[in-house]
Length: 347
Image (cartoon, helix red, strand yellow):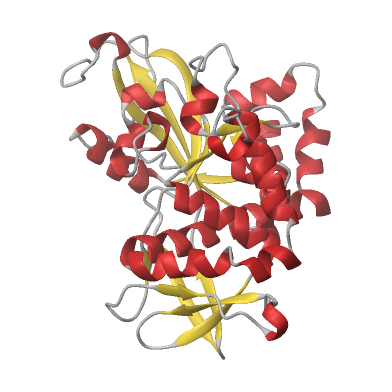
């Protein structure tokens, strides 16, 4: 599949356009650049082990050094398939009555057990729970980055807004997207091992229905980002939850959308402290690993398309599939649930 032209999976600034923002929520990962020491494109290779087995890593070449990026085969398959499809949207919590009738087919989404919809490649994997956790987590979000707010607003509207104040002019419920948009990623190698570092940012946006100049659909209004806060690392989660709770308890933080939702019949203190537990940290770690792996593979696909084709050929070789059929069987099942009439599904 090639889903790059679908409105819900556009690259770059378009993802913050009013036509997209009014129809999508949840988690995105669209970054296709990794900062490396050389100017060479990243190349990923799969070196099949003894007896046609998977060695537990892929080789990453940045033009100066070759290093191993440790990843399980069962995790590598859905990530590589998602990148190869051209998709960028991973998850959405929007209700079905908000999404278009053909959303699942156009965007390649299936229903997720934890509410919402998830990209079909990640259904049934640990990443589905991680994406749900990332999208609903209150204590995962750090301090607002005013500089990033201004930079993103300048990119999407041509006018920098350093201090966006809500007023009677502002209409529509504020919503958010967790994304790696505007967050530079770096790859480092150490003793033959490759690691990727980068941020996930929660962007909270609004529509100002009276600011319609330059917008294709005036009724939609001007979209702008009002907050941009980095998602904290798993090791920072417990301390950040304590900060969020104290800010809320002291009344120094205006309750935003997710906190209001949690307050509806929910023990807020118990909810956000549960997020900081071992399970929450593990799911947040899975979310970061997914984002880091996505940007690594997407950069390789964009920078060296021929080598990417060879990589996908090795990944789906008969020997590897025969030894580890589970991720492929899961993908086929999910694919046919969304596209039952495709030739691959026997109809």
